[in-house]
Length: 217
Image 1 (cartoon, rainbow, N blue to C red):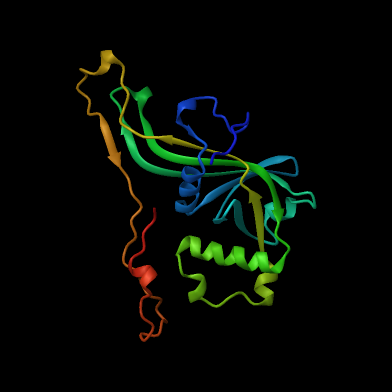
Image 2 (tube, rainbow, N blue to C red):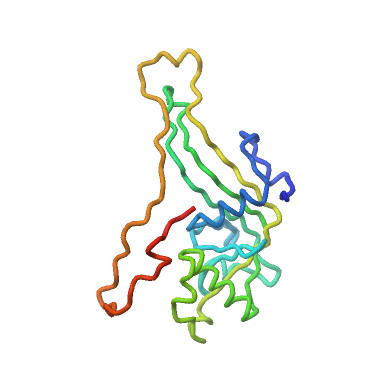
């Protein structure tokens, strides 16, 4: 299954790197820890980082009731552009112009709605926790009435979506191949360190298995 290519979801450069299959898009969204939400706030552009989670073909965005996106959202919704990017390596070429990154990115265009239904909101908040650490929602106290009222969630349907993937090494001009400059790729990975317990944690509370084996991707 593929998302349809639209004028907004078709890149103007390196179109061969575009991906529209749901598997690629979902994998990138599910691996990324942070997204950036672009919107108009009082007719001025704004881009804010936040956490996100995907449930099926809906992308949920975390916020507070007093945050700019929530205040800017009207009953008809808030037009947004949501992006995520994963950097997999540094691509070092012989020529300065040809330096690049190995990356995987997703751009989502759509209209975000404020989640009003209580059950959907609770599902979304659980998903946001589990997106950060799978299993965490069941291993924490759920929000109380006051906390739930202070927390806001936006939902964006995954309809106009595209991914862009850049892999491989540097692409130098033929006349630069003989230059005495190192060229190649420096791989980058996100690696979790050893969990550090809170100073006031009861020693009887052991490390949960989902943290002992934590990894992204």
